[in-house]
Amino acid sequence: MLEANFLRFNTTRPPFTDTRVRRAFALAIDRPALVASITRGGQAPGFALTPSGLPGYPPPAGPGHDPATARRLLAEAGFPDGRNFPAVEAITFSADQNQKVLEALQQMWSHELGVTVTLAPKEKNVWIADERRLAYDLSLARWIADYADPVAFLELFLAGGGNNATGWADPEYDRLLRAAAAESDPARRNTLFRDAEERLLAAAPVAPLYHGARSYLVDPAVRGWEPALLGFHRYQHLSLEDEPPTR
Image (tube, rainbow, N blue to C red; front, side):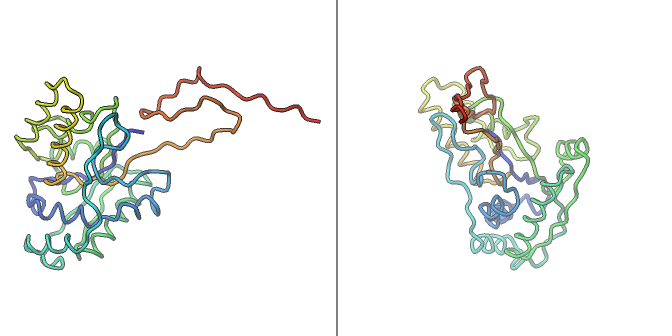
C-alpha cells in the first residue's frame, strides 16, 4: 500500500526554524520499535518519505535511529540535554492509533532528548485547518498516493503547494522536481527524484515514521490473489480451488 505516515514540523515557528532541531527530533525516533509495539499491523518502518515498491525507484536511506547524533544536534542548537527547550505541542486528528503513536514519540523525545512535548488531538477538520494556517508546532500526518510514482509524495513539499503545510521552501528542491517533470528518460527522472528526496530528508521539514499496510484474511483455496500497490484488487482474476470430495 502506498501510504506514508510522517511528522510535519512547522518550520516558521521556533524552535523548528532550526534544521538541527528538526533533525534531532527525527533521529530520536525508533521506527522499528514504533511499528513492532504500537501500530502492529504489518506496517514497515519509514526511513524515507516514499514507500518501497515504486517502479524503478529505490528510496534514499533516510534518517535512522541515532540518539547520540540527535543529542549533539540539539546541544548545537542551544538546548543541551533539553535544557531551556520551549514548550511545544503535537497535534493530530482524534483516532486511537494516532494518539498511541504520538504518545510513543513523546516518550522517545523525552528519553533521548530530555524535551517535553504535549499532545493535542483535534477534530479532523480543525486539525486540517490548523495545519494549513501553520497554527501548530508538530503534526502527525498521513498521505496515500493515487498513483505509483515518487512525485505523488514529493510534490507535497513544493514551495507554496496547497498540501505543503510546513512553511518550508527550497528553490533547489523545486528545480529538481521541475526537471524530473520534463525528463523523458525514466532512469534519469528517478535520479532527479532521489536527489530531491535526499534534499528533503536532510532539511527535515518532515520526519518519516512508517509506511502503511492492509491486512487481508485469504483462504488457502483462493487462487490469483496478487499484491496491489494501490490496494485495488481485480476480483475477476480470482478463483477458488475445488475442494476434494469428503468421504
